[in-house]
Structure formats: structure tokens, C-alpha cells
Amino acid sequence: MSVTGSVLNPSPMDVIESKIRAVMGVGSGDSGYGQTLDIFQNKTGRPVTPVSVPQYKNYMTTAINHQTGGSGNVSATVFPPIVTGDVPDSTLDKYTTASTNLVSTRLNYGASSMTLYSNVFTVVRNYWWGPLATIACEVDALWPNEDQARYFFNSGGDIRLVPSQPTWSWLTGYDYHGNPYSYHSGGYWWNAGLPRLGTILFRAHGTQTTGSVGSAAGNIGYYELSGGYATILNGQNFYNPYSGIPGYSDIDDFFIYAAKVANGVRFRVTFTEANHDQRVDPSTRVTFSYQKATRYLVNPPITSPSFITRTAL
View (spheres, one colour):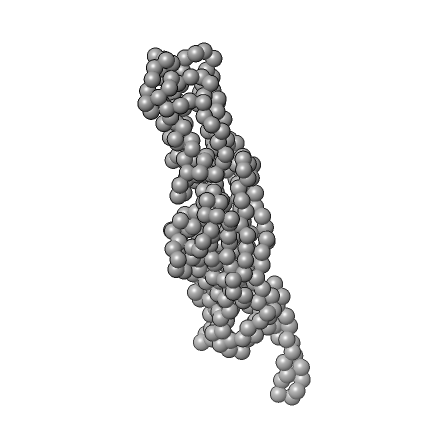
């Protein structure tokens, strides 16, 4: 059966078009990659004609490639070629199925579709003393507008935080006889402990960590934030370097919080030193990286975040 020459309102292609626009275009909420879409040839209430079909195929192919890293099915089985004046119902069914699938998989992305931008921003602390001395910083990740932030996260973008203490030092002490001896500073233990927290990845829906310690909020991501801080990484008591010594402890804490702000996200990071005898060396830090879609969603390119220190460590 052909639908050429018949007038359906809305036409089958109008339904397909609305799904393509929701995923590839501006969309709303967690749907929309922000790509520029040319004017479709098919119009509401007009016959479905072959001239409109290549555009639908091209846009859906781009989305499939992004979602699968180029390994998805964009064959003639999915998008049958149209070489006559007819657009068969079977072809419309396949295009409808493909557009419906794009909506349900809109937050998927292939690894090869993305680029990781490493160590793009770092906030550093000079030093701090115990007991229970806490240092904190607030950093904003911002986009030019709310839509640009949505496109970043909708297309698989994430923000990555890595804490570290790379500059621990040897200190000099003196025994009862006045003889000098060397011992490592409190930064030594942070240098050993912070890598256990791994990399914390903040995504559209949820936060994950690659570390062996600390609890990430898998149910809190960009779309779950409000104006108040939510804990996205709980590193309470994440490391005790003296765990093998009975009756002695030095249990330190590390937390990451996130809140929604205009055009982006605000992160608050805290380090707490529990040992009153320790000074933590300069360069205790948190480093920011991000991943974004770069291979297929290029019209226009996905916008990168800008990082701004709101409160220094």
C-alpha cells in the first residue's frame, strides 16, 4: 500500500519528524543534542513524498552513529531506499521504529564518539593543620546558557574530579638528645590515600567513581540537582593509615557536593585532616577534566564547560 497522494494530518513523516527533532534538535529536559536541522520537505497535511526521506535518514543516521560509536545498524534494512514515487507503509514502519528507538536510547553514546579533555582545571591548597582542620573549595562549571549545558549532558558529557596530594615532603625532628631525624609529613598519607578515591564522574543522571573507597551517589546527576547542595561523593573515614596499630587512628574525610546554578553546576570539595600533629603539605588539590561528544554531533559542536573558582581552598 502506498500513501503517496493521500493526505494525512498529521502525516506519518510528521510523527517521525517530531521524534527526530526531540533527539537531534533543541528538545527539552534530558532530550536534545542541539543540532541544527534544515527545514524538512514534508509538511503537515501534505502527501508523503520521497523528497523528504533522505533528510530523515541522514539525521537518524547521525544520531545512531553517536549513540553507538558508529557501530549501529544504518543499513538498507533499517532505512530502505526509495526510488519511485511511492513511500510504502513498510518503509514508513521502519522509519517510525528507528525514530522511536532513538528516543529511548537518546542518552546512550559510543566511546569512540567522545573526547576526553584531561586536567583542564586545578584548584590548589597551600597547606593546613589538624585536628579536624577542613579546607574547602567551590568551583562552577558553566555554559553560555541552559540549553548548552543540556546538550553537553544529553550527549553523554561528564565532568570528572580527581583529588591528589602530589607534593608530600620529609620533615626534620629532634630526639631527646637534640639529634635530628627525618620523618614524612601528613601529606605523605594523603598522597597514599587520595588515589583510592579514584576518579569521580558526574553525569546527566548519576555520579560514579572508579575508586575502591568512597560512596558515589549513583542516583544524583545533573538533572537531579536543585539549588541546595547534594552529596555526590561520600568519603567519610575513607582512609586510616594507622589501621594496623591498636588504639591509634587518623581517619580522614573527603566529600564532594554539587548544586544547580544558572547555566551549570557548582561543586564543593572538602578535605578534613583528623591528626592534630600533622601539617598537610602544599598542593593538596582537586583536578577537573571532562568528556564530551565530538565525532558526530558537530553542527554545531557541543560546547565545553568553563571552570571558575568561586571560593578558593
